Image 1: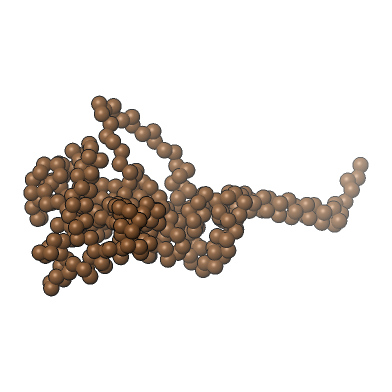
Image 2: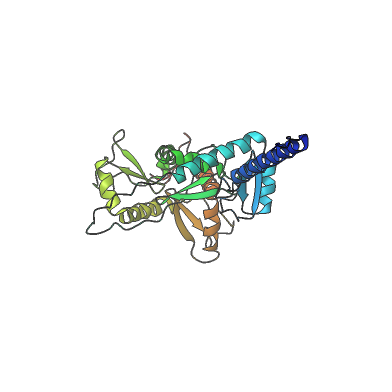
Length: 319
């Protein structure tokens, strides 16, 4: 029998089939590469992506909470987009790693009372150093009861690479911001006089607590709510009589015009409002209003040396 010659037409047909098959495989691979969004939270609002609004950048699928945020992303330059992609991919790798089973904590006879986290009172992002609000509403995250505010979602992944180091940086800034207002000259635990150069500066839930030694930290944590209440009482006693504003820091209305002023402690400072409605507005931008109060302290209670007076005899604001 004679084998039919392998015609040119047949060879061309087979070649076309091969090319089409290769193209289909490549398209399928690309589809798989962008099938899943690299982020779970919107880069602008921090809210969960809606599962419907996406864009493709550098062959990576990026999700948003709404179409408005998608348009904002399109306005970013390539360097900023590349940084967001790298940060999101790094965060996803960390999340995908199998987590070791946490050790079961030993039972205690009396669990410590949980204390609600104090506000993040710094005006800048702990990662970028940018002023909060410069890139839209700050994104608020809580880590083991501690509130942290970021300028954008891209900074969250960088912070979470080393949370301990991130909080060490935050604590340093909070101590500097609050030490001038701390109301006690004795350790809240031992009642020992706080000696300069030997004081332990401990930050608990974004609040500075000054102790005579590191050994007192353990006792403080056993009943933090109790000791914070004592510090708050001391703050009210020392700062209320010389409070630098006669008006509400939020609404601008005269204090007392709507009944007894509402008082809140934030960053070891007393803040007075005309009504409860202003507290929520303060909580959205605490750094902004605290800066206004600090400026008022300086303007009203500064002596000739530039130090602020709390009782008319000189000295610091909170001391």
